Length: 144
Image 1: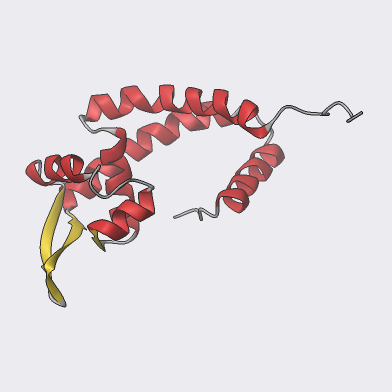
Image 2 (image 1 turned 60 degrees about the horizontal axis):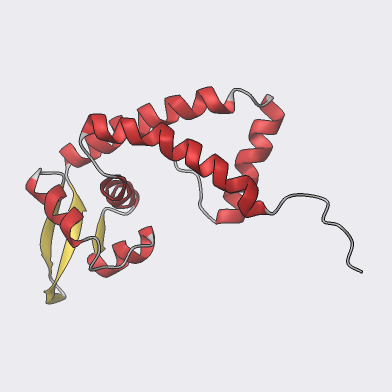
């Protein structure tokens, strides 16, 4: 007979956390008039300024056809530019504009302000360990 599990499944522990984080981010995104996908696009382009649509979609975990309306909206609002790839004129490269970077920075600042309130429940050592574990397990590096 198998032994009784000693802890809850990771998904069972992470799902409530993700719901709380999404609830924290949603009003900030709405206040700035950007969708979660739009913010993901701006964040990815800010980290790596020039990307093809396919590379961007892979970086943010989206289907490349799914993000077309998001890219269209961001371009119409002046947050990104699509420029021809000099190596392949059929390909459009995506670049974040200064307005897009300013929007992303503003949204990120507000989101992280809310996260700081949430993280303050942890001791400084637990907070460092939690963030270090997230970086290690997700493979996502912290950016300055």
